[in-house]
Image (cartoon, rainbow, N blue to C red; front, side, top):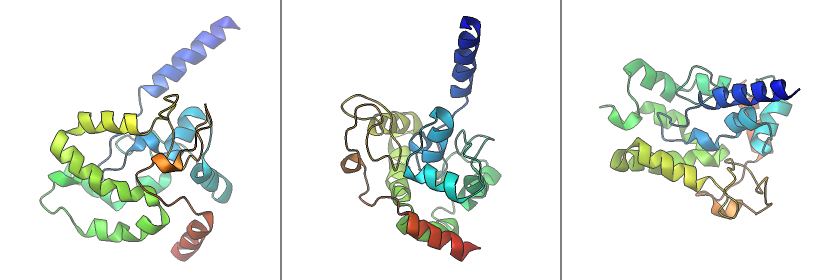
Length: 185
């Protein structure tokens, strides 16, 4: 039994090293509800929505990896950046482009997407490493330093309310998301 536990810990450490929280558009995958549900198990309301209302597998290692949630895998911004072999949209001579206009309806449906614009500016000004460090600090409970997700309501460790800490004020709305999915069919 002890050997199995050690092997399981080793395998988990190996999986953890494969995650990449950087993105092309400026979202922070380290707070992604889908990635965190896959990585650690607990689901926030957003991950529960996808798990309960679709047949999509909650499996992702981040936008810049080959193991990407199905919805993110077809993101036009991700596709474009990969085709152009750029690390961030701000490196492209066409930025901002039509791909961002296509994503505007998501800002109302997915409030976490509103952070991407400021994040792109920070990446351009401070660099990716500094931005990733700032995001890592931002998406941790200030009381106990436990990571939380875009739509986590309370800290899973100490119970602290989290909505007031987020850089956006709207919460995930399941009904709006269902309407959006039905329109896309």
